Length: 165
Image (cartoon, rainbow, N blue to C red; front, side, top):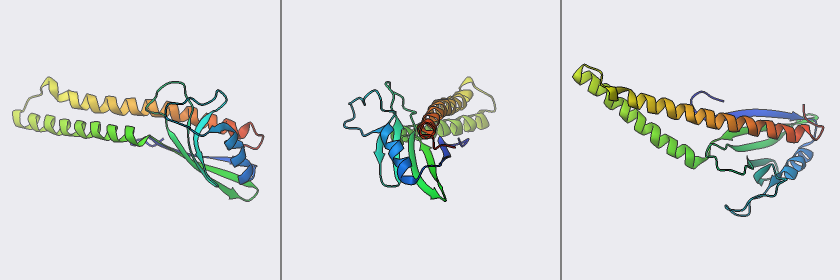
């Protein structure tokens, strides 16, 4: 994961062909019929698969705004297939976080200007810094833990087929 943005990239190498790797993944992905429907108990992921790429997320039975979206593609590399995966935050959540961060930056600028003008620290000086740090911590713990779970689960999909390395 990168230190400033909730984003993670990794690769999975498998001895399967691109078509076989896609078929293995297709068995674990349920297409979503509606926003409020729950996938069957056997589904590990939900989303969309195309000929050489996919956009999926982990199936959970609870709400979590930090659930990453896995975007990947299958690339043939000799006798193996490389699954190149990028995990990103959901766009709406990222937008809300950017709004809060913008508010934090404005608060920090105001606190610094008030300190420069008055020459003394007020208890309100630390509030925007605390808000910014808390938001950063919350985002990276939430996204990081969910990204780790999704990566392990996706690796298990390919390793259980006997083709993962």
